[in-house]
Image (cartoon, rainbow, N blue to C red; front, side):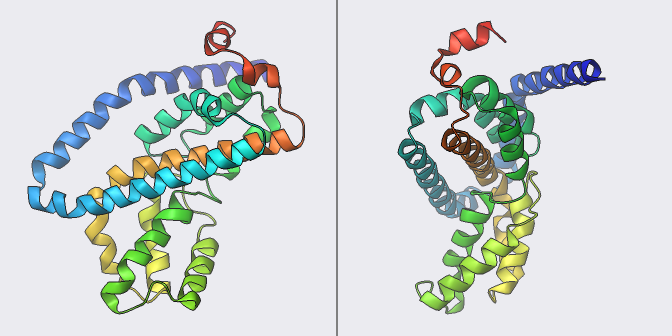
Length: 249
């Protein structure tokens, strides 16, 4: 039975790697289509939100790096080892589809036990998604608040936003566009019209790619730090060069 499962897993991983090789061509086609059917002025106006979103994503990646450093883990080596999983998450826009690569990166390239890696990867696709819950919806609410006469710096309003975002983050689908549906919960709860979400649908794929990469990185960071704190990380695997890892795969 175990042999059959291992064989099936091997075939699934081969299919995933095939998708990784072909995904850039599909992304190029999708981006070309969006540019061709969109007005240039509209793209420029929405560009500010895209830039602000990726700035926020970069800050969160920095937070992950600080957490890794505080727990005795070299962040540069960590990011280099999990890069295959992050690149697939970026292009696929699906945290759920990246679970196999996330587990593989943690176990074979970082030295995290499979039990911890599997729990962190699967749990992180529905709860605690930094890109969806921790950043996008909160930032969207803060940017929309002034347009409806709400002070986004009001402590009571901020506390309410944090509570709503945290509670509504449970059960968010780890698939492309999941944050858009999640925003439909947060905006009405904060007193904003749902129609505001429609304005961002056109640029959703561009932002969603970065959000998904952050979600996956967050789950792998959780698994790595948990393993480190429990003293179960195989440092020989983490310290091994990439070419040595590939030779034993």
